[in-house]
Image 1 (cartoon, helix red, strand yellow):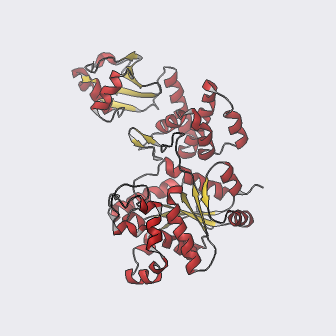
Image 2 (cartoon, rainbow, N blue to C red):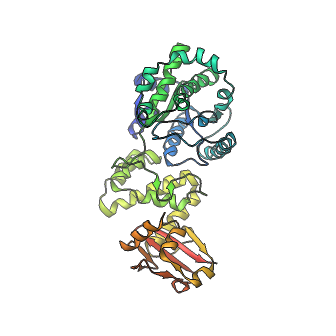
Image 3 (cartoon, rainbow, N blue to C red):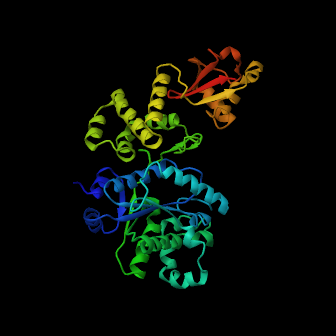
Length: 407
């Protein structure tokens, strides 16, 4: 039986790790309790979180116990990692609302119950701390010089780092200590941009409890050009079907760059390494089969078998010039189309363009067609005449389709 640490390394998840051989041996000997923290800064998890969820599923399948730590306390401060300015301050009510939405999403991925996955909220201990006592017992273990040298703080010194945010690393480190004491949690994991924060918790346990703990970070989900994957024109690629439809989720992954197919198959699906190697041995148009497997398998894990099948059918129908009800759709009042709607406004109404200037550029560059007819002029007015059987299909570029219906 393979060691799950070897699985994570082979599939390309592991970025940095403390005491690699010791951790590998531990994961092969007995069930290990581990955790990943998720600050409740939005109503939904997104594609970047999905990589971390995949790791949790790999470890749970191998017999280890996941702790999902919701940041009911840390979200009130805000992690400065990767940010050029301070995060938007949320109320406690907003944070708890988001945390509840996260809980519902995690139940789709992990098995919860006694000795299985568990959801914990760090508000349980952080919001009740005695500040002076916390400084004396925990703060004395942290060197300001070392903290300022950490990348998450160093990159913010020129723009300005608030004392509020400066506390974040200590709070996250304390989370690890609390989970160690309450759940015998020995391993903290997270994205590689969290290395400084995770390392602080690992060191705190060793200083306070004089016991072993481990830190591991994952490769961030980026394209071959180094850009963060999961960003669309309408924002993040969310795991909530109300924010990003299964079709949009499927289409995003179906359209990844050829250079990113193998990596994303390894990180976002459970397709075997042997099958991935075979799928990705193809070139050119033949690689589309691998992209379809990637899109279907990831959509199936996130949204279920039926939603993945509908998304795949809709994508294939759009590609062949057909129509599917699963395609992203905007309903417009028939009166609006009777009076006429300029093409730039229509592109904004459907979310195909974020602004009039972007819509103008799309039309001028020949990137927009309706029912397979190119829209050549920005002055074009869309009327009922564009409807075919009560609907029209707008195509942006070569791969993005959107249905408009009259009501």
